[in-house]
Every structure is written in structure tokens, then in C-alpha cells.
Length: 340
Image (cartoon, rainbow, N blue to C red; front, side, top):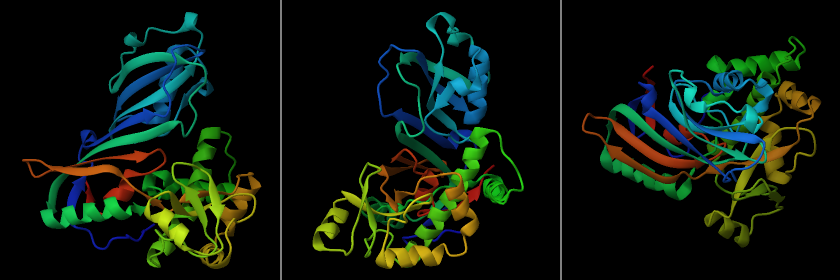
């Protein structure tokens, strides 16, 4: 999928992910483990390692079932990341985590909590991304960063959501058409998420094309900042415009599922036109009883800044809320070339 940018042409070019250390992510939970309970919380640094594979490694090491291991979100494989895992295991059977000797895995801390980790329980992800052989003009880069800090960027789902060569979308299509059956719950969840994310992305892409991705239109559903709550508007008035300006609310797009479309008027017409040929995915979401929800169309990276390196590299630092993608920020800045 080629997704339109909101802020014009790239301000430069660079090599992306030349090595795992070039993409560093630190996950911050939205809670503080209380030190008691039946769930072990592990803070793990992983290098060039898949989250789901690591979860299976931890389960085997601890002697528990794979389903007894949870995490708040998936992290990139070709990266250096820290993230949290929880394991449902009695204190008397907890292993010595310092003896987990496996290349690319380091248990930083362990504690306990009364409930297991669930998707979405991470509050933020802090990114430190190094781009190699960066070619750009300083004033143009600083101007674009200023625009992004003021206006945000489209809240697209990143390409990793869709798998290698969009393979997760192909699997979702086959699943909905009855061509395959998927017993593995996590794999099935990936395929469903890919289809749902695709529908959201193409709606957002059209709103970027119409230059109203960061504005309210008649019949919109507005998301409350930092919340999954939303409300419907018939028309855009001064109060809605004011709340948009101060980032109290955001326009939203569909996370398709069972239930009413939640929008009316101009917003409904736009979404209907974009999704008119997507019955396979729309009907599939309904058949598996996914609930119709909404997602903000825009995101604002926090503390976005850059550092020039003496070797011609450029390092970008910023934070995003859970569920937002660093690549959506990068695509508004640089033309990226694979370094892998």
C-alpha cells in the first residue's frame, strides 16, 4: 500500500535499519507492578528477536504453557527493544532468571503483580532511530519537524502490521473466503488485525488526499485524547474547532466490526465510497464478531528532536503512545532505503 503523505515531499533521504542498533525502542507500562501476586513481570531487552518467539522461549524456560505468557504489544524483530512480559507462575516454581543464557536476550528486572499483562497496557514507546548516510538540508528538516510538532502526522498502521509482502492480508482474505482454517489464536488475531488496519488506512489515506485528516467534517466521530471514548457530531462548530486546536479531541476513522457505522452525513459518504469494494473484509469482521470501534486519524509524536552524527548519520528521538507506529513519523520526513 502506498500511503499519501500529509506534509509534502520528503526533506531528505537515508538508509533505514542498516543494523539492529539503529532502531531502539523502550516500552513504558501504564502501571507500576506492586510486587505481589501470581504473575511474574519481566522487563526484557531483546536483540534481533521476535516477540512471539521470545514468549515461547520464556514459557519453556519457566515450564509453563505458552498461553500463560502475556505481553502488552509486539515489538520489531530487527531492532534492540526493551519490553515487558508476564508469566502466570507460583513463587515456589519461579526459575532463576539470571540463568537464562541465550544470545540476544537479557532479563533486566523481575517483579510480581496481581493481574497479567494484556494488549494495550503499555503507555508509551520511546524511540531512538538512527538513519545512515542521511542527505538533507538542516533548515528544511527543522521546518518539517516544527510542522509535525504543531500539526501531527496521519495515524497510519505501519507496514509491519501486514506482514512480509502483506502476507497477513492474504491470509485474512483466504480465511474470510473459507479457503483456510486457522486454529492458532495468535496467528488468527494477526490476520484479523491486518484486515481491520487495512480498512482504516485506506479511509485515512482518502482523508489525507482531501486534506481533512486533521480536521472535523460533518457527521464525524470525535475521539477524546488519550482515550478510546468518542462522540458523534452533526456539524463542525467553533467549540469543536477549538477543541481540535488544543488537541483535546481528534477526528477518527473506522475500526471495522459488528454494529452501526457511527458516522453520518459527509463522513459516512466518504467512508462508504472508500470501502464500497471491501465487502470481503467488512463482512469478515462482522462474522467473527469484532466490535465496530474508532481510531484517531492523527498522532502527535512527543519530544521529537534530531541529533546529527559526525559520521553522516542522523538520530531521531521521540515517544509515541501505545499502538502508534514510528514509521508513520519517518515517512513524513525522509525517503528511506533498506539497509538490511
